[in-house]
Length: 336
Ligand SMILES: [Zn+2]
Ligand SMILES: [Zn+2]
Image (spheres, helix red, strand yellow):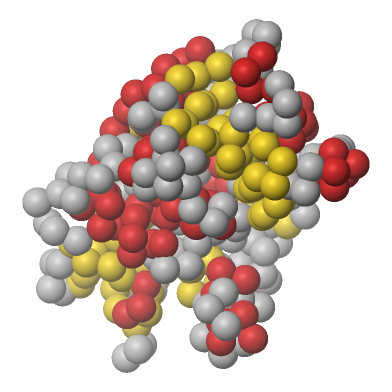
């Protein structure tokens, strides 16, 4: 089948290319309807790579996509992860750590795994999660980032009745705020440098918000801290220090935000406060959970949506998505 796909071939080299795909008997084709632009897509566009992984050949961008199964037309969210199912991590229920993971739109492996910003994608049957076709595309296209957020909440060991801090209120931080509220936290405080991000965190359910530039309320710092669980979703070193300071002794700190050079780790305090530092990377079964939470209205992600572009306006869409002063989540529409 001949299709158009959004390819990145290097720094500032993104274009719509004609390509062909063929599904074998174990695969199915999904006609993509909507896709969200994520930080990693912006990195490939701006830097030709993400972290240590730079592009070796052209790759289709995108991993936050939904569509319709071909030819049945069933509406589906597409899980961008294809774990091998056989390695020690897959066998022990940690498929997000799969040694042979093929993740949409990632240059981590070579050859790279093509992403979902295309008219059609081919996936295994395990990768499609059907959803109610009366749901709006703009809501359901949040399934993948919401799965990341729910996985982070699960990594914390649970938030029921707990006081929660989220530093970094971008799309993932805000979805963590909403997921913590939905999961029964008693209080969720969002922290971000940007007033616009703080306002969106409030719209997503934060009990209160704070700016790291303002004086931190004494309540959060006195004795051994205030929050039972902190989520660091900014990747900024000062935010990490704030989390350590404001998290109670024996509390949990989940690291979700990534940024190059985030190495300044306050080891002594972590040790003395017996903080449980947990990483959080992608998701496992949380993808299905995210689809259900969106479908049932348990989470409303729409305060995060800035604008929808036709996929043919990809450059304009990427430029706006990269402007953190204006954009939260940008989506692409693949329907004519
Ligand atoms: Zn993403
Ligand atoms: Zn595996």
